[in-house]
Length: 356
Ligand code: ATP
Ligand code: MG
Image (cartoon, rainbow, N blue to C red; front, side):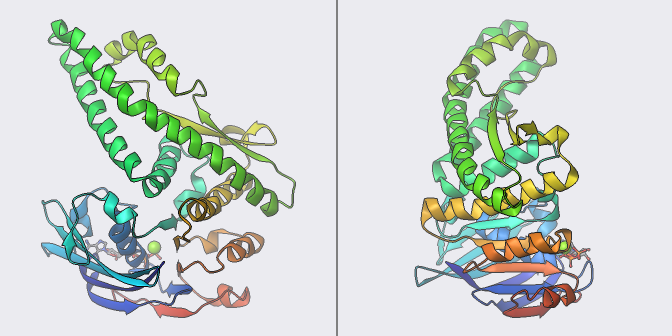
């Protein structure tokens, strides 16, 4: 599967843009704030319906305009497809595949798989649990459409439960209705925990091999889902924390608070890892995503590398390069000298200046 071309209309700082891509490495270079990341963001939005850096769709629309449009031509198993994404101010976005409107974002996940790697991902180990949950969820959503809808349902129920916990301050007589929300939370939460645990288990195998290569066999990496009490214990956790939830007026237990631990040679590197160890582990995790997607779907995902090359030393760049074989890759950077020096493949190179 690969992306043939992208057309943008009023997206971020682009008025109009139409470009076609190489099937292997595509480089976007130019000064800061010219629109390099915006192109990667457009691809990501078109493939997942969500931006990786902005929660609000209207931020994606060019200043002073009311609508933006992204069109992407992709080729999957030799068959061409067209994805259209229409963003409107203060309205829900619309998307269509081959001219047919889609109702659920998950329909897009079946068509295109993306792995995005930005400098913030290098901090995934030392950041808080939210970033690690985002990492698990973004992969699982692409691998399983059911997961995506389960997660949305879970989040809706969580919001209702939290609202009730707040309302109870004024209407304590409503407390018995909390049981109904707990039941729903368990109904959607337990399968989420189960899938995440399985995902971490599968990732473990791949990441161990990659990390061992990256560190010349010096480091053994292992991942553990937290809490490790298992999905069936979620009900117990909810019960135990009922008093605390009532006091704090928020839900303190559940997949929305879970995490995963990263150990290197049996040390928890979230807290005790050196900066270099944390970054190498992050790179190994990201590379593992590529293989897990291939293993699960039989397809190579498209790789989006936003500004990460300059953050990696040459041995890590080399490692990345080895893993990019036959993967369509989009790279942003401010200059190409280093890439030329490191014999990086550059099949197509775009110079980006002020939104063109
Ligand atoms: P860097 O090298 O610093 O990462 P970049 O080339 O990746 O830079 P982008 O993030 O792609 O930069 O683009 C940033 C530019 O887009 C900024 O000049 C910003 O003001 C502009 N921009 C962002 N959102 C919008 C918008 N909605 N409308 C118009 N311009 C926008
Ligand atoms: Mg950028």
